[in-house]
Image (tube, rainbow, N blue to C red; front, top):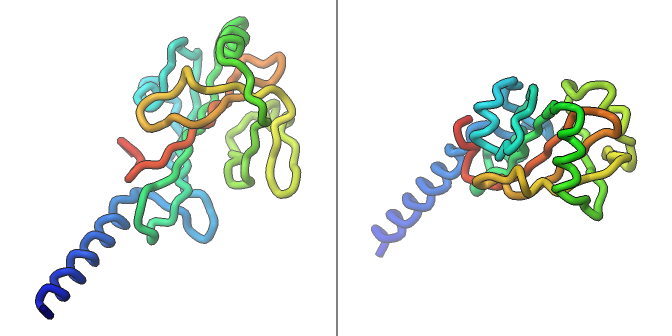
Length: 173
């Protein structure tokens, strides 16, 4: 009987160690850990559907989980997609608006966001709220990234895409 208890404890320890070890990056002291910025639209297309090819992209992933805690990893993909003059309106029109405004936590307000985009985010109660229209991101969903939204600042040719996922680890990163 004691031998079964030892085996059971060993199996649990290996399982918990394996879960914690599968996380590639993590949150440390409340700070968001990110993957390097990328301008590679081909790599971005591995994560999201890009039915209309953007003229340029800038994107990264942010890991929101603590690697010391077993279980799935919550992570975001944030991408700035630049399109031609009429493409943003066409993408937004096809997507449909959400009822809720876009909100970012302080750690999600990225230093690489252009100032013209940052100007549309209002600081409220320790968070940032977008003062424009928020759109459904269903057309961008791919694989495990199936929750999110995008915003488009008026008179701009850019979309900020924010998708969230929960997996055992960030694929390919």
